[in-house]
Amino acid sequence: MKLSGWPQVIEDHFKRFLHAYSALTVKPVWFLSLMKNYTSQHGSIMTEKLYEARFPSVPHETIDDAFMANDINELVAAFKTFLREGGEEGTKGVPRCG
Image 1 (cartoon, rainbow, N blue to C red):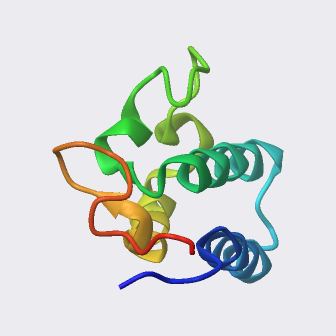
Image 2 (image 1 turned 180 degrees about the horizontal axis):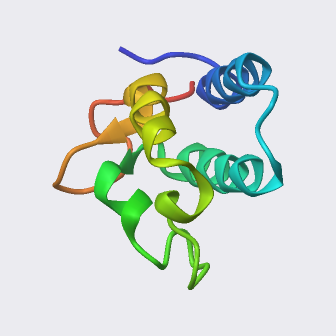
């Protein structure tokens, strides 16, 4: 099944999250922006990539650097639609635009 406007779905999801967590500081908002851009380009992201020091090519920032430990589970739960466990990233199993 194809979903028209998938990039807009991603944008709307991130906006709702930021609205719900309006007290976030610059660092988590910046990380979310990187995550949104990556997800928009690739359709999904492996959960493990959030913990890599090179996500998404920033050598010193991981999800642990941007969020408090108790917030990470909420973040992962909120974005489970766009997260993949293991395997390859990309649009496999993710609705595509068009």
